[in-house]
Length: 418
Image 1 (spheres, helix red, strand yellow):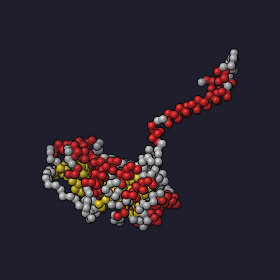
Image 2 (cartoon, rainbow, N blue to C red):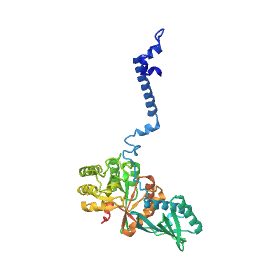
Image 3 (spheres, one colour):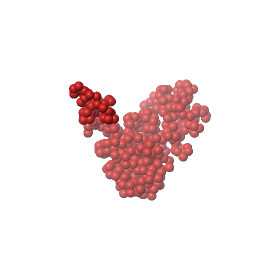
């Protein structure tokens, strides 16, 4: 309103025949009082609206709430743009969906071999598979081709022999598969017995400490999953208690600087490139102290920091003091983790498979099958997943289907990587 304009203080007042509201509001004291009253009214209205909204009621979390509405540590995963193995997983999902459409059971799919190869300095898994196709093979192949095209990747399909085909991404071979006619078996399969010499597989779930309901679901599985817990997570103590009660191994999930930092945020109290040795040491020890009972530590993100040998050596020396092992999550193929662990005298492991870059139950179960194949070849393997419900469901199903064939064990029971 014009009478609120300070510049009008120099203007002659309009005479009034008698005092009234207009005369009153022209006085500076009255103007200030009205302004304050108006502001207070607006604040009160906003407060009433907010306090009555469902969102505000949900955010007023009681101590018994099992899942944090706003995480104190962001659930960030490090982006792996241009990583061929992530593109391979998209092709995996396309093939799985093609099998589903053809009503082919995943249990009939044969994963013949998985081998680790390199492309432009990055690791990826080359796979050899056999598909049981009892119907029209050409129709099945047409659907495979259609599925590849739907991924929007530069993926191609080539026949390389009788009933044998090769899939390539950007000209790089990633999958080789054959087609066979399944034989109907009428007899019931013999019950699977637990083999004490069966290959070992450690399944680590990172980013633990935010979702207690999911933690309880993992603890209830018929397999000992390793919990890697954020030191600053909302429910770190309760998550530790759940793990200890069910006999699950506990690790520290320590944030480290990724490439793309600070735009890509690893969360609070991360190890950063450029930190001095004292800060790295204090930060590492503080993280360990927040997760009592941990037997080891692995990196959250860290594609930049783990390449820094000097910083990694300082961090891993703290693990030596606390008798913890180091599991390299392998977010970069240039990690200095192995070299630093050897120098620091720390037991060293490294991840073989990421389970859930593609959050699909079928795709995650297939990643578990890859990990199992590696375990059969090498005697052991380590797979890392994340606390989402697709991963929990996939592990539950896969464990039930593969009981006895693969032993799910703590990381610490595996043979260290040399």
